[in-house]
Image (tube, rainbow, N blue to C red; front, side, top):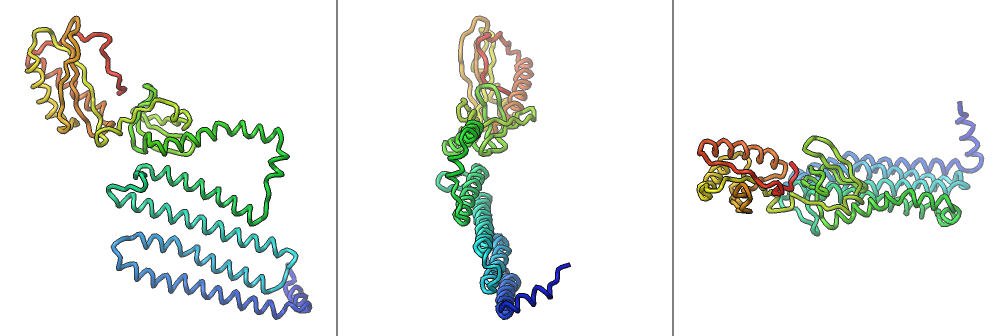
Length: 357
């Protein structure tokens, strides 16, 4: 056990007794102020915010409550320590430690405030726009802000502790070169993610087709990778550097997010094209996933060797519905054509649909 009484007597004998008492009084004042703000002032703000129409101010109040309390207490500890006059040989280290705590507390707090404000307006504003930033890009934008805040924290802490990394870099030698090569792919992925963000190639929720191989919904965008969920419920994690250098078809970037579906079919020579077009539009009007607007249309593509070849073009409101809508239309068209005695023809082998279901 520590001999606290002996330590206290030693401090008093060295003339620190009065200063310790004064330091204790200083700390008590700061604790009182912190407690008052934490309880009474917080409750007053809670009452005032009830008169506002938004709950954003409540969220901001809750975020600021603990950092303000902790900052006042830490300031009291620093003031009490500075006044006490003890451990002066280590004063610079202790002061730097307090300053580091301040920096970390308020960088985290400011980041939470920015994230809360962006999330709030993104969720409560129908047409959220901020400098070209859409709602679906907010999660990725917040990750960039987080990375920037981490970098700021490192630089400020290095400034507080007067650290100079140039000697470390100079002495790294071959190890530094090896680390640089090892980080090359990571750096290219980060820059790829930044290019995707500013180019607005796709956003979370977009349906994309990559290099005519993979099709699915973008479920997450990170600084290094993009995650895509395919129609088989398989999650693909693709480095951003590859995404930035691939041919990406954003199926959600068209007419108000809708996707046009191409349905190929052929009928025998001699059939009534007008009659077929009328039947197709009647089927589309009854189909569950086919949109009324834009209006479905028929395109006569080719007079093939064995059939008159057409594309029936219709729209679905979400690219996710493409496979289901096309399957339903195929079933309905086959059944109705068979009942109406419209004879199918053999479509040419080269006449294929490039979409992936």
